[in-house]
Length: 489
Image 1 (tube, rainbow, N blue to C red):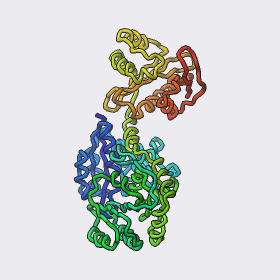
Image 2 (image 1 turned 60 degrees about the vertical axis):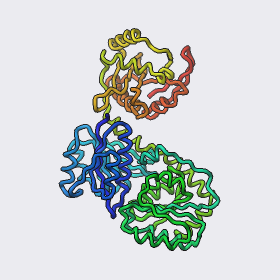
Image 3 (image 1 turned 180 degrees about the vertical axis):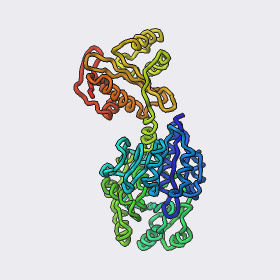
Image 4 (image 1 turned 90 degrees about the vertical axis):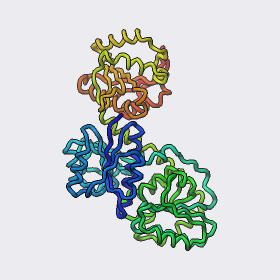
C-alpha cells in the first residue's frame, strides 16, 4: 500500500465534468500503484461512475467558500497522505488553509489566474504551461506540460491504431463536453446539416447531465446522414478510434483525441479554454475556433478538414507525438516519491539487499553478472557497514516500506554511486528520487566529494535517470570490465 489519495473536485451543468474526470484519471493511476482513493465533491450524475471506480465517495453539504468544505476535507485527511484539488473556485485562501494545516497538496491549474498559489506540487498539464510565471511558495514542485497530462486508464492501455487518413473524413465525432451549458452541440449540428452530405456518419456524445438532450434529438433529424446520440459511452478510446475527424470543446477531451490520433476542430467556448487552444495550435494537432467570434466559420473549416487528408494526417501524427497516455502515472509517481527518505543501512537489511542485487535485470546491467552467494554477500555487507569510506542507505516510503538501496564509495575526491530499487517498485521514479536525496546528503556532509557513476552504454534507463538528476557524460572508458560511460554531477 502507498497510502490514500484524497481528491477534492466538483462538477455541475455550469462548470462541466472535466475537473472530476481528470481527477478520476489521477485516482486510477494511484490505484494502479497500490493506493486507495477518496473523492470529496458535488458531482451529480457522476457519483455512480466514481463509486464504480472503487473510490470512497463523500458529498459535501456546500462547496467552498462555505466553511464546512475545509472542515470536511480536514476531517478525512491523515498526516502524510496527499490531497489533490481541481477547480477554479479553490482560491488562494483555500490552498493556504490546507498547506497551513500541514497537508501535502497538489493544486491543479490551467490558466495561472489564482495567484498567489500555495501547494506542495502544482500541476498544469497543458502544452506551453512552462511559459507561466507562477507566484507560489519556493518549495513547491511544478509539474508542467503534456508529459503530465491526466488521461484515464483506458487511454493508457489502449493506444492509437490509426491508419493513413482516408481521402475524405466520413466518420465525424461531435463531443462538446459532458454538460455543454451553452449547447454548442446544437450549433455544430446545424452547421453539419447545412452541408447536405448524406455520405457522412455522425456520432454525438452528450453526458447524462446535459440539459439539452431533447433538443439534440430534434436537431439530429435535420441531418441527411446517419446520426447517433450517445449518452453513456463505456469505450471512449474505441469511439475515437472509429472517428476520422472530431468536433470538440477545447477542454481535456482534446488531449484524449491527441492520444488516439484524431484530428480535430476545437471550439473555445470559455476563457479558461484558451490555454488548451494555444497548446493545440503549438502542437499542430487541431484547428481552433473562438465561438464568441467565429461560429459561422465552422462550416468552412469543417469542409476543408473533411477533404484534406494530408492536413489531417499531419494533425494526427502531431497529437500522438505530444501525448503518450502515461501522464497520470508520472504524477502519481511524483506524489509517491515525495515521501521517500534515506536512512543508514543496518545488518537487518542484508537479506533484502541481496535479493535486490540478484534480480536478473540488475545483474544484466552490473559489471559482474553472476549471482552472489548468501555467505559472500553477508561478508561483503558487514564490511561495507564498517567501512568509513562507504555510505550505504536504504530508501523508505512514507509508510516505512524499504523500496531501494543507495551507496557511495569514497575514493579521494570522488564518490562512486551504486543503487537498485525493490522489484515491485521499479519504473516509478524511485531511482531518480533516491539519487537526488543522496546527492543532496553528499553535498551537505562531504562537500569535497564529487558524485560519479559508471553506466553501461546500453543501459538507457540508468542514463536517462542520471541525466534527470544533473549528471553529464564525461567520457567513455574501456577496461577489464568492458565499456562504460563515466558520468559526473
